[in-house]
Length: 79
Length: 376
Image 1: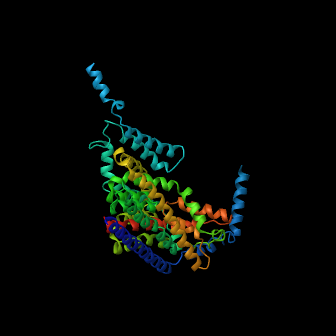
Image 2: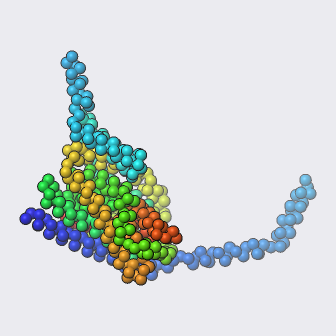
Image 3: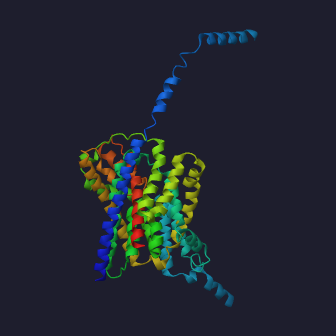
């Protein structure tokens, strides 16, 4: 008789426990989904940086190259 | 002659009882499993050694005043050690996979069925003469099905301290045995075709989401289940330290120094509970059997839930992922990956399985909170 009572209580715990675990984690699912809508993925800054970095080699000033070349040459001549 | 006799009466040999020798053998077996077989060595080594120390006659390690007594008293009776471990685990956990695919939380919830089914089973065992589990005992035993060592120790220390040794040993042994226990169940419940399902790549997750997530979990816990806040709160603290990026030193301390130091003492304290009086009982045998059942049911219910979700999503979810819903991070996720690769060599499920895996940690903490609130 004592066991039937305990078993009933255990069954009750099983039901209540599973429902509350599902409710809690189910609520988290909804909350996380909402959060994803509010937080855009930060891919924008990465995309913005790349084009800014690329043109550098193209804009290497020809005058600058000439200046460096002559400086190197002068240094070598001095030796 | 008198002095010699007194000395003889003081030796270990004179005082040994067979039960203490058996327990020392159990300790030695744990050391063997840790060192030679590499089963959860971080825990089984200190537990095994603690078991040997606790059973030395006349040394008084576990009597009031002995070191093991104090370690247990300070760390486990108060629940502090498992909570510190939880903080470290939080600092090591990346929720990215779960945030990218939050539906995986349902798998973590489904796998907790192992816990509650075992609760029922433990009470059923009372039919057999020799078993007398109260509802508290049954709850503490059932949490083994959550496959989460610190949670099991935390709950056992609150609900059934006299069973703590057996429960902790069962929990950690079965966590080490995940690669043996899970695959046959996973194969039995899924078809070859289902196991071969490949999943879409996960979306990238922003840093802001990762920072907000632990706060949201904590907030939900405060509102709905305050009994789980010790576990969930420490876990979220660790995770926030990791993701916020501003306290890297604290985060590193939580996931290295603190958790390592605590692991040593936690192991010793658990080992100290492996004394003959509490361990060499029929109940221990029952706990070992129930633990294995809990694990198997948890795995099966996770896989069945994943199967259901797979059907509902039109075959986009691989049902193997459900097996990762029992926590056992990251072992269960690795097992899922391995079984998936067997069915389809192109099928890499590891990242996807981390989602339900960390959901399982949350799930078992929530289940522990429910049990504490209802039974404690």
